[in-house]
Amino acid sequence: MSELQSLFASLRQSADPDVAAALERLVRDGTDRELCRLNVLDLAAGAGLDEERAIAGFLHAARLGVLELAWNVLCPACGSVLDTNATLRTLDKAEYRCGLCAAGYEPTLDEMVEVTFTVSPRVRKIAAHDPDALALPEYCRQLAFGSGVDLPADLERVLGEVVLDAVELPPGERAILSLRLPAGPAVVFDPVTHAARSLDVRGEPTPERQALAFVVDRVRPPAATVALRPGPLRLSLENHAGVRALPGLWAANDALHALLGRRRPFLTAKRLLSNQTFRDLYRTDTLEVDQRLKITSLTFLFTDLKGSTELYERVGDLVAFDLVRAHFRALQETVAAEGGAVVKTIGDAVMATFPTPDRAVAAALRMREAMRVLNEAHEREDLLLKVGIHEGPCLAVTLNERQDYFGQTVNIAARVQGLAASPCILASGPVVGHPGASRLLGRAGLEPAGGPRSLRGIGDELTVYEIP
Image (tube, rainbow, N blue to C red; front, side):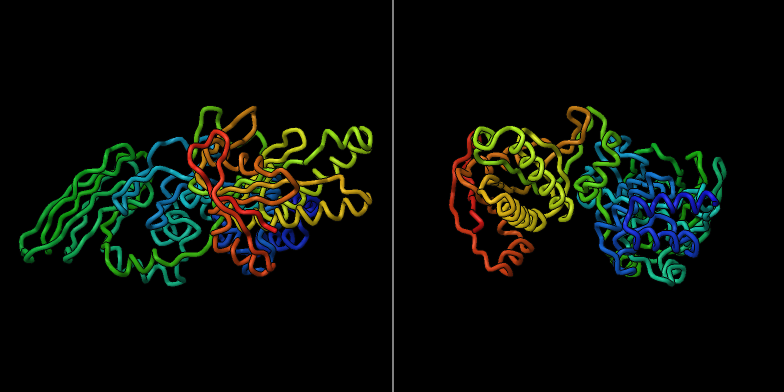
């Protein structure tokens, strides 16, 4: 048996068989392009695979060494890859700048960090493993933009309308481009290093040749916009970046905006951090102890068992322990099935995260049903579950050697659950008002009722609803 066959035999034991088979076909028969920075959501949609099972399968494949996982920092405006990291630990800048958009952004894990998968060179060698050999169109297609940018099949033709001229420039080399500037905004841009200089081309055309010098350098701060007139330009380029560069003059025209405006869903870091398979496989391989990464919206679900102390007294330690274990198994399975992850358990309580409120509400409803089934099997109402849900911004952190979350949203979610005096599902206004959650409750014929409530340690009142 070859190494590749052995790897996929192992993958079939841990991942969904359909996902493993689809990935094996792709590795064997796919093009180099298809095996570079795979968009797992797009692949799942095209192959008719369940998204959660596809994500889990790709994570298992990365752990086995079939795929390489990357965390790519994206420009939220144009989708350019501003930085790529093998682990979240190296995503440590306070700001990332996009040369193409001439803007800086504080990184968040919602839509600014994508997770992609590339076939490992030990499994199959592809062109992107040697990026210096990629010409500009292929570099743009495979490496320069995130997997959420839906680049067209005729990318080379479209780039011909956008890139007025470009050159391949080895480290330490110089080049001169002679071209004619059209009116309108433009940018001298290198997609490899993101070095850039914005141009404002306006006024009467000039017959005289204008001159501009540009140095490709990773560390230079962005320079002021240069004012030029339409007409001939002598562009002097010099590469100080230490890597092969692809500098050129890009027109910020309608063709560029249309090119980068084509978008599709992609796997975000926020969603992966709330994935149970990821937490299980990469338990100690997430953030540094002093690292803080922002998430603008994450949904937290807290549960607790009502009267668990009385339960131990009523049925005895052994029976109660088995019941509580069964309750934990049911909750963990439900959380994973709805695309969430259990962050931790505290006594008989569970803290879980979900990428969106509707998934948390769906999980809460399934948890309630699971407790009903367990109670019926036991022929007693022993497992009485209280659930609280809230959504909002937070920080992803490392606490007690595991990935955790910190912030007021977490505190409020716990306090919402603490309001429950009897078995019920309580959710804050932002959760119930989420369009997906509202549709879910409507289809189930459930109408939440509630009003303003005071939460311990929280200054302002919060609207809290009970889901019947």
